[in-house]
Image (cartoon, rainbow, N blue to C red; front, side, top):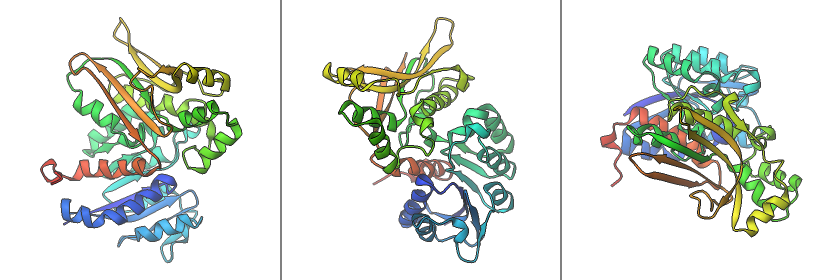
Length: 351
């Protein structure tokens, strides 16, 4: 039995659900993979807790569900102790970053946490897009230098393995076009607007269901889709893409009348992220609301679905779609990445 010590920063929708999921999956992880995950440290925006012997995953979830801070964890919680301080002090094998995106402050504290963890020889798994948008090349170079794994499949399109497929299964191909609907909430809101729901009611419902970021502009103004496209472009296409390279537009300019008219034509609007290969070998990047015909591979996405289309020269056109009714698949990507690091493929067959 291999024991893997993890530190988790961020205990919102994803981090809390990760704790619940791992608590439920521990017997399977032990039986199938010979693996035990021990959460030795966790941090939220108000404090942290650290116990080398391991925190109780269910207790962590209960604390957060009750609206409290992890600093209230009896005996080991420390109010005001930040994520960076926790990572510096802890002894662990893996950093799991489920903290909120914070591009306005240089992707901190996540970026410093990731750098610190790598310098300590920890593997890093993140679902936070910010550090990748700010320092994609730097973090990969640091991971290679320190001989640690760096995984981030959960940064694009929730639980959909968009990056895994693009980086691993399309090797040797030239991509002429990449299309993605990597943001769930914009389609969710536009579908409700098309049905006559007001903007205020649609966004309130999205927030109540946990699919809208605390800073609504991150989703609704197209920043989230643009950031995910930057990650796809860097990881899959080999571009040195930055956020400012993306032509971006939010959904507030798409009127209910436009949405209803598209629906009457048998079409639907989605915030479509695209990378188009140009004659000079570069890619044009855009993330804008687009009316998609039902014949388009992504033209019939449901209200809580996301998808990616890769158009290649040798593998044809590959489309894959995920239905994500709640944030569980997004949180599960951290477990998938962790198993990718620690589990030999020969032991991962399901019989």
